[in-house]
Length: 170
Image (cartoon, rainbow, N blue to C red; front, side, top):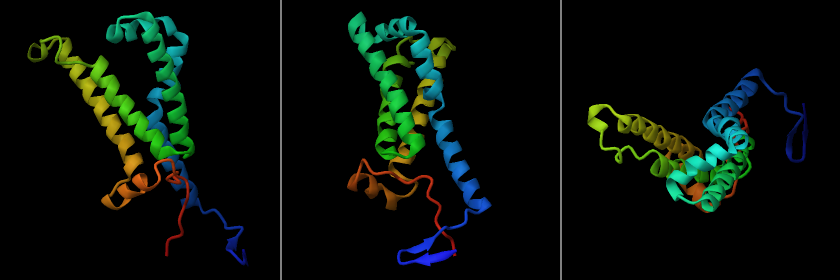
């Protein structure tokens, strides 16, 4: 390895560095896998059915169609941002909000009134909690895992968290 005026050039990639990058990518892939490819593909292949489901919340076809198209853009665009590390904190923040909104609009476990008798409300409750938990995972990308990293998002919300950068350890 040679040293230039700006530090090391031609750093050798170690097996641990490769494993670290693979794990970082795999964790992010697991978080977005629900949206990209599955939910996005379902919206594309079953667009009419998706609009029908959206009509449960907005009751008119035009706004329901707009919701599905917006959701499709969010699912694809924000998932790609998280996977590539491009404005990944902002993308994760948007997906966290998306999970919260979809939980409130389509997982209303309190509406059927049969929660304690084991009806549909109970099933919706678990789906609601899964949405909330997934939002929490996205917020970990947004704000980091410690109190010291929260300020990074507020200082530059569109900055990358550089998820695939491997730092030298002493």
